[in-house]
Length: 146
Length: 371
Image (cartoon, rainbow over all chains, first blue to last red):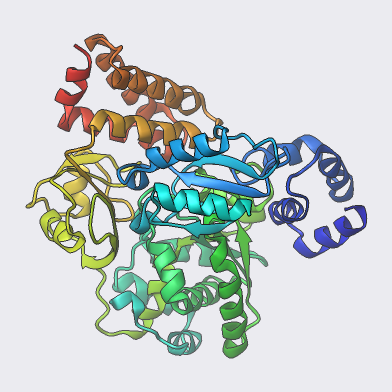
């Protein structure tokens, strides 16, 4: 990461895009990386941690290979998102914010993802999956596993 | 649909042949108002920023559409991003900005690549030295608020701050900044170019218990019955929610969907989001789901919102589970009013609109749970 960090900072310039790029490459934003970034751009580590922990798509903990953001806002809720969340929790044996032991999945129950006309919906690694039902969700999880 | 008409850079060509003041007068005369929810006249906003003397000015296109049930900006960026970009260029020319940012919500990351390509092509075609950059958000509802966007782009926590200073005077990197919504900017070329441009047309995001949810263009003032007819109700609709922040109303066919009427009902039409809820759903459970949203999205800066949204959620869960007493409804109402009156920003202030309007329209559902 060290050599690449200069390039990322040079290219992205602003902290939020820098952090997003780091997370894309590393999967999360580690303390070590925060320390390096702080040194290089000359702002306190605490400020960078402040930003890195503010957003629901940035994380300072390692994440699974597949990061699920399932929506439980009203449009998805009235179309049965709660049942799907239960299916996913049972299938994966984890709750929101947790990662499976095999490091394959991380689950986040979150806010609206703007797929309200195709509810219920979720994002897996920034890709939208919509018009979900129990069967579809199980198939998607199986595809990730294989 | 009016919003899908393409102007093909003709509006830009017209704009650069005009004086900035004349452009501002034109969009003022044609009554273009902000489509992000606050309905602020666009000409005024641009006028403030144009007057400022500064070497650097910025334009931010607010594509952080986060209000649950809203997906109109996504619709525009998928179906007519050219008009949005042309609008950005015209806005930059008018206020004298050389740098624009599109703050794109992280949930719409899949749009980033396509937008970038179109931006490069259009800038080339325009022959301007204005630069447009996409900044990807990272998942925070509050970053749709203009001062929070500024903090977020600057690399700080995306928390809002008290105005003044207003962004048009002192905004991004302390420079004059205009922040306009996607739909507003996409309308700019149409205002400039189309003689018959209709200022009352809005994009309604219809979702919830509907067989044909989607984006529908209609004039403000349409009746709720007509809106629902387009969306085709799934079951008997009992309530409509204007997103999470806009509150709820009993569904009545004849309700006129315009800003004043909805406002008088204690709700907020905002960005024209309508979520239909049928009678199979409990309003108490809806309230708990929405309260969870605000508890999760509260940025934590001010106490009324940080602590209040958490307490509201706890009270609603208690009521929903049947452990509450009638006294708890009074407490819920009182706390909702306190949060509304004392929170720092729009998120906090509107976080209990749904509770207060649910209590005035569906109080019996809460009382039944508290016996």
